[in-house]
Image (cartoon, rainbow, N blue to C red):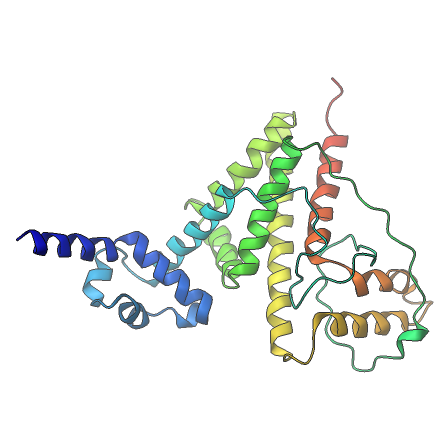
Length: 289
């Protein structure tokens, strides 16, 4: 009798909602949303569909629970938010050499150039001025960078997450995900001393940038994977940069000027630079104390 009880306890744990969501995340990571079916889930859990339906009503509920679980873990983690590590990997391969200048702006989604000219024709770009972190370690700014990086890394690790976040934020603002992210950013905005009348606008601006830029980075990574292993990140960016440098100087003077920064940029550093630009604007608008 004791043996049967122990087996029943193990089976209950294996079929808990948490275990089902964990298995769903594994399927989503492996095959995307199309790969998450109740048939595949029952096979992975070695159970029947009835046991799963006891915990989740349908695929939509399961996708929502998986999204919330990943977001909760990302926000609970404590990444080195202010450490702009030069060794961090880009979406399609390793980051470029440390001496490469850094680009500051939204994540690039430029496709591969049809014709890339010789690399020696490229004019060297002037180094971009580094953007200093918008606050000391442990400050509200640092807390916002931690939230931003946690979400950036989660979206990069789970390619399906970006589209699910957009779905949740567009159709289910009352569910857990949107308030969870908004609260994590908003508490830091309040701690910065932003007037209450500006809390919503400031938090929304940061939240839209974080999710939009991180989602674009994930899209770039997915697109790069379709190009095949022979097209690595360095070659892809070099071809795109060279194509920019060959644009008409009268029509594209600015794009030509920053083409060298496209070639050597690090996506993670660039993402954080964007966060710091928004924070700089928010703090500049704070009332004098």
